[in-house]
Length: 420
Ligand code: EPZ
View 1 (tube, rainbow, N blue to C red):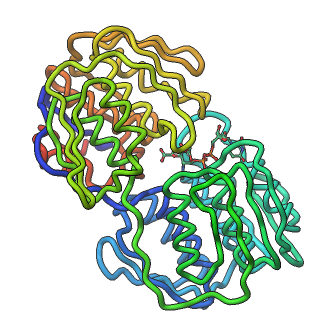
View 2 (tube, protein in one colour; view 1 turned 60 degrees about the vertical axis):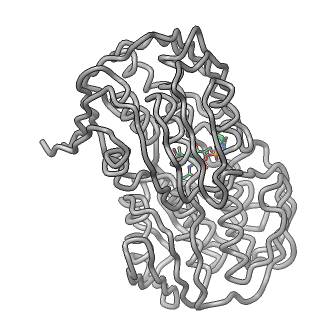
View 3 (cartoon, rainbow, N blue to C red; view 1 turned 30 degrees about the vertical axis):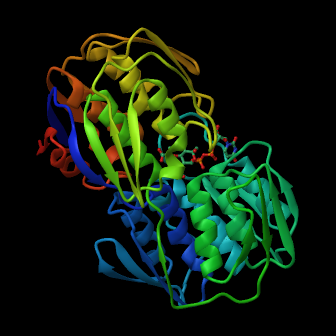
């Protein structure tokens, strides 16, 4: 079992380049199944969820050629199966996008129930609601989701809850449907817009992505042979922004879309950080004093992202005074606070609320990542803590962060990956 050994406490200084967005890439890859042709996808993050997605696509008959560490060509002309391997699909959440893509093109899909971070129940009723609205029959039997349709006909779907996954999955299943599909109360995250842009590049007709009403006019034919570049990762950028403030450092974040970071920037500036938009795709963030207390409420975009909740929790653990986090999306996303308390933090988590009594210092300790973002938060905590921290369960972190220890080492962290 690998571990990261981190020696704090080190203010982070320098430049970090953000990779392509995990939550866009894991939707764009299955979306390529819609094409009876091939396409090239660039700026893919080099993470295990992308590699796993490629393995599943190849198991279905797609031909994948790696052009570089971050670019592939996918040829979906000879798909041999619409039933995804159960043992692979259960390893992550985004396998559910295979349903929308396979149903959309072949009117048939069989995919194991998705896995992913343990954040609570994580139902898929809204995905099923969308597929059924288009005319599919969906059964969930023995841990598998089976969707079939004689025909897919556009329909209006009002989402009962704002759902990133369901919004994307309904888009995928509607691209080749007859007529127009309207998704109301749609999610608006940057990765939703990126998936819609990818689909439109392949010849789909999608308008309104990024607003709460998305219209998909079904088309009969899609393009082949195009190239698409994945959007920079809003959450990775926000992770390093929190690291800059927590470590009292000074970072330049490159290859980011600053507009996507407004929700994070506003909160960190409110707490005392300084952020400069350097133009293009760059920002500078620094904080040379103790941040002030804050109240953080996670909500769908453009609100404060739940995927940055644990990272800002590290900032709050040593901020001035008493802070509060309300986690509105997931029932169980405070496991990391128990690990931070082992490092000297004073956090009381109850249900969807956590109270942070700011302490002067954190101290190194052995800590265990419970999910992808909690793992990133514990790395930040180790960098800010006095002494040595060992972070375990790295498989969570490697799912969504490319070469995380190298990126942190380049900006001054004393961090090593040790294989035990
Ligand atoms: C996506 O998960 C992300 N994962 C999550 O990021 C992220 O936390 C989440 O969106 C919210 O932004 C990927 O994109 C692969 P949802 P998803 O559907 O699609 C409820 C990370 O760290 N809901 O937007 O599963 C659900 O229980 C990961 O990168 C239903 O009730 O999230 C939750 O309370 C962790 N029924 C809320 O909606 C449904 O059918 C939002 O979930 C679907 C969702």
